[in-house]
Length: 462
Image 1 (tube, rainbow, N blue to C red):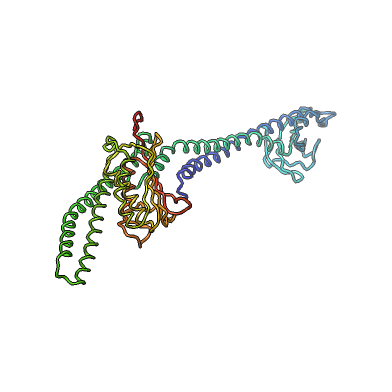
Image 2 (cartoon, rainbow, N blue to C red):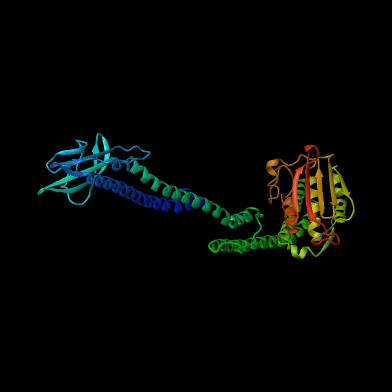
């Protein structure tokens, strides 16, 4: 059976309703048939009694003159055939159809009803007995009248069919109301689904249960408990990464100093000098990775309610980052420029926002080949502040854009770096309730990273 809740509920509704309609429909058909039988039997008895009333003695013999009214009672649009028989107890036929079928039981003083067949047609018949007295002679006259059953069947159908139609309409209406009701009543559950589906993977906030039905609240509360336990585990993992990175930074810095001293100490051979240089480069990579891990942990743990109290001029901050990275860009023969239209105030954490701009710009410089261009631009339109970092490098494949914000993911394995830069950027943007997008650069070359933050101009509520 299907797993659809709507279909299963409809089955629970339709099966009992169908059984109910079948049982009541059968009962109503029997009632309609019984009513039609009563009407037809009354006509048959009335006709037989009218004919019996016309039986009389004439010159010592029984005769009968069948009145037309006795047969006209059966006139109908269905053109039923009418048969009758008037017989005496000695077997003599006074009038009617000679082969009229009679009941197998003995005639009695009470009217008798029975079903028979005549000339290949099913008929309903009734018999009435009349006692005839004359000069001490008593005769029993049996008057039987029969008719085909087309009118009776039509009457039963006319009585029964409207009831069946109403019950079918009731089922259709019930199904429609259930479908409409489920559509409206399941909206809170669909909103919960949308809330969970639209969440950031690391957004571990409980689901609101205020508008949910009482029956659904235990399920959502159980999910919230699971989210709470997951949040505890994630927080513990982040603390571990931050603590481990913090503990590693001091010995790595000391190791770097010792390696630098060993390289500057005389009396070592070229092979040892090359090994020390490689160790020093590895140590610098380890120090960079440790610092990035610390920054990522700090960005993940950032609280917007605290960040929102610190005003930061993003344009001035971007200019400082461009000046700091100018030497790196010059070394790689890359044209690094800035496009600033004036102050662009936002609210947030200055250190984290500086890391955001630096990581985007450094990423662009690292992936842009010699002779390329990297541009950092900041624009304030009054409602939002937009930071864009554009380059004309090889770009990011469309299938990789959704993954470049994952920690340690790199679009190209041949490129240097830790794979944490864009992950840090994303966490900082999320912590500041902003948005970040990656699009192809001008002419389809390179990448343009766009960060949108709320402006903090005076008079605008944040």
